[in-house]
Length: 294
Image (cartoon, rainbow, N blue to C red; front, side, top):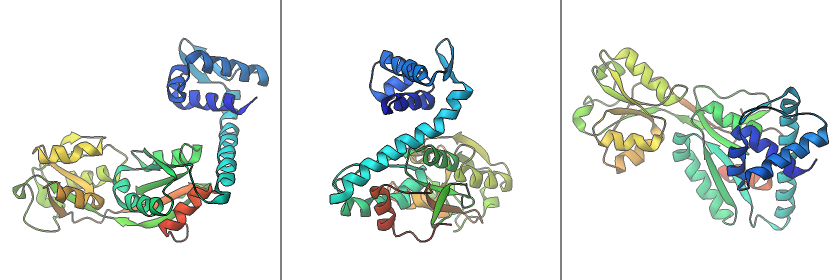
């Protein structure tokens, strides 16, 4: 058994097929298949049930996933620790973030870190919900995560550092699209067409509260891609309920922004697995100035 075999094995687990793993790894499909067969031969057991092109983990395969991730995580930590002996002069830091928190506070955090450690490559991977961020950190596809949730996450094995709270705003294309009050009570949005996020997000939870309070209000568009929200608003499709982190970008784009009168807030946290962090991740926390984990 070797590291390459474990890396290929986890790529198949994460992408669901040899084809997806090969695309992610930038190798030929036969290389992945050969590595899997070699790993199964070394372990003396099948790791996948093969049904056509589908690969489903056997019980033995499921038992290998956690240890395999630990091996690769430990290898990355060893390499980055040795490389940092002379200072952070390279390497990569993998983060996972929800869209609204990527706008703020993550942008500012990255700016401070990049100013101090300009040779470290930062990779930010998108996650739609808090659960996706936590899963990325748990399985090791990201070392750090930034999320906004109704409550601070309390997950075994995960440290959560509070970064503050975010409220919600209404974003419209014209002044006439919103009541002339600020903050805007949800019940005053009767008949409003809303642009909402997918279920499981704070944006959707706040929008659902508006739909419940405002007579005749309805969903015009449900959108997973946050980058599409402002163009939809400016095109007159509807009014969006967004985290206040979007306030500046929306105003700069020419949209009308007003506070939503709501008790709903997002608790913004930076999360990581308990235990040793890579030097880059540890220094990212330091430059972020986070307090004690919640």
